[in-house]
Image (cartoon, rainbow, N blue to C red; front, side):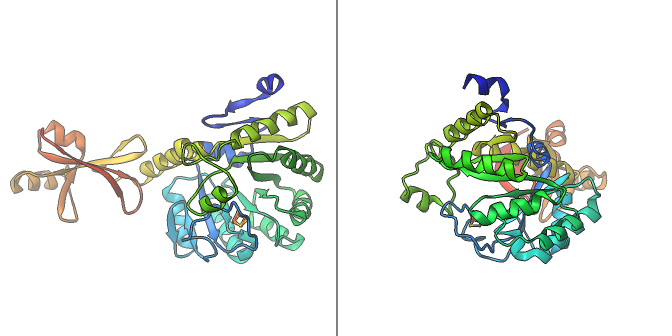
Length: 345
Ligand code: SF4
């Protein structure tokens, strides 16, 4: 491990840690500047650890981050609302709906420019040289192959010749160090430049399957032993001198850092004049004062009518000594209220 610690960058408990270079897609994700586009829940694979929820698995639905999208215009709008500088296209298998995936890539590049970074996840089961060429023509920047079998190596070989960044992304299943190292050695020989090892996560969709196979969780999120497996593999890659970057992405990080940073960007992009940003949330004051005062504030542009309420900023309500209810919410559309508190000024 001593050798590993010298090479290691990042922080294994928060941001994630890696040897070599961090993929561009991960750099943007760390800033909260990537949107996650779930193109379809349809997938030809049957992974026992599949984390998809019942609402998504096998269902031909599109989500951008947590929001259901009806069409490609919805996708572009939601990406704009998150001030994203890139997107990760996932599923299901995006190749199972290739036309839709290609259309989304083109629409995002048209709307946000060539520098908008797009990466895509697939096991490669349905990938052919023609399909790969179509994705690259549309503007795909990076592809991540989830290795599930021989077909994934065939897909890696196809992707490696395409001129875009190619990597592997697999969960670090506890106790599978040898298998993961074999995957990494083979991926490096096939042209992959990075490998992402995700801490295995318990989710609504895979909990029963993981428990049945003897995996456990102490914090309700990460599978016990997954972190150790990933770090063991990182150390072995350094020791063997395999010419590839390897990144370990902790499950907790997704919520603690990436999600909150993304919300903070959404708060900035969608803030109403009466809202203030509080960490990654928005807050405002619903004032309960006599009609005359409310009317004066509205006429002056200091308060606004929101549904059947009169709202203003918490700072102004305090400054003017107005009795009000402080409301805190996730900056989603519509706002998702998580706290209300009576404030007696
Ligand atoms: S490839 Fe992904 S979406 Fe498909 S079954 Fe496996 S984990 Fe689930």
